[in-house]
Length: 368
Image (cartoon, rainbow, N blue to C red; front, side):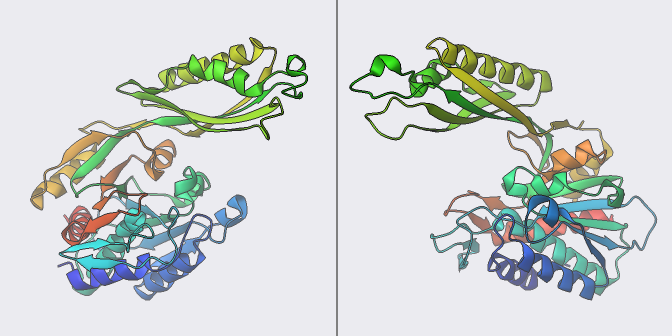
């Protein structure tokens, strides 16, 4: 029932629309025009004001034609860089960029699949459950748009985010929470050749703490990383300030909190060991979620995938998605793979058949 050519053309049209984080206005207007033309009610919230962006989150409502629970589907409108002036190339049943940008299948594959489903529902008059679509802004910046959602507008009983990589059939039922750690390590400036004794080297102070940290894969559920260090101005000046950015993630919130505390302690002790000090801020970027295989939202997706001949794969992930926020709002939500591969790189691609299967999977969930 899915129109393959139309679904592909929609995808190609979407990736040609520039929509880096906080600059999603053009794609938001495109979606409003298409969906209102298909008889849906579309509402835009005020997230743009809250995040200093161009557009807010879009809430789309389509009445059901049969009794049953309202189902939510979600995809994000923004892309990472380099994501402007994308020139999609179709070769041997696969879509690539021209190698100079990302393809933006993350997450325009999810958007294209959802638009195709709404079109099919209208054309075929299929008996379908009530439908809510949610298109968020600034997901790539730490789920920023989803954090601004108006919970009163999200009335679905359960939901699906289309924002995981790999061929359709993967169902992400566990995802970690994340802490962002921002630290300023302060020493004292001095001339490095004339009076090094008068200085306190902030780089050395930071290095003491970092060298003692457990980083990388801590256990199957937990990771830590120091990803940014900035400091120093010249070789003849003892550096006074170093800025550090890091993170911890875990499927177990207690493990994440304990690891964050450990990193903060080591930074403080390392700085103080050479006479410096550390100023540290910790932000919970997003909460974790964990659903059970027997939960209805999981079972419905598994059965739909099986009916399409897909092998349902229940997985955990080390990354966050809008599903983290929706679960926190009380809407049981899993993250479905929608075909995109090698995301966030200029080698990103999607197999056209996987794009079509993603749309078919959504349609199967809604109509059976």
